[in-house]
Image (cartoon, rainbow, N blue to C red; front, side, top):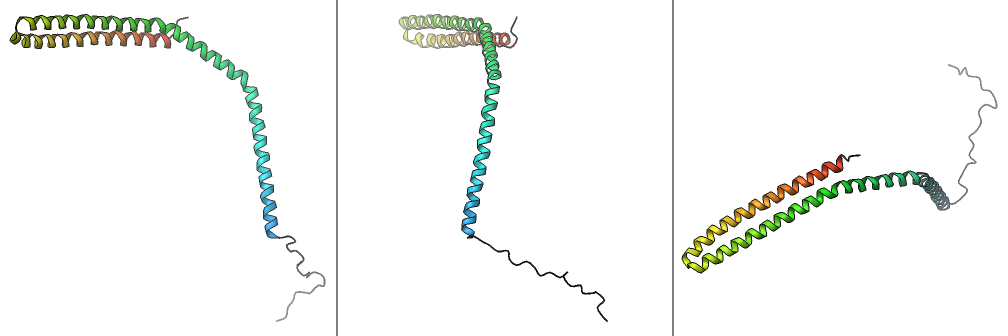
Length: 162
């Protein structure tokens, strides 16, 4: 068999082997790092400028929202104030009732101790039971009244009138 491909002169060019490294590899890597660092620094500077611009533009809106939030907080405080005062008054009343009952109990115990030592133990037990029940009842009433006052304050703050 014969080769039927004609051989045309000038079409078979040899490969260009003149390309090669002209510098040291370490210097190239160092300059690439410097170039990358400069690029990253430039990006961060641009980002910082954009955020500063955004902060300047958003500042009036943020101030307005903050002012409105402060007004709502003040309104809620105004509405809740009477209810909190009421809760404090209820707690104060309950504390006063507890103090009166405790003093009465202490007087009963002392009176029973003076009459008879044997009877004093029984009287003290009865007085302790009575005082405990009374104190528990007073504390329960105070807790209920305080809970109701706080609930009323929360409702008033959640649904301000006007």
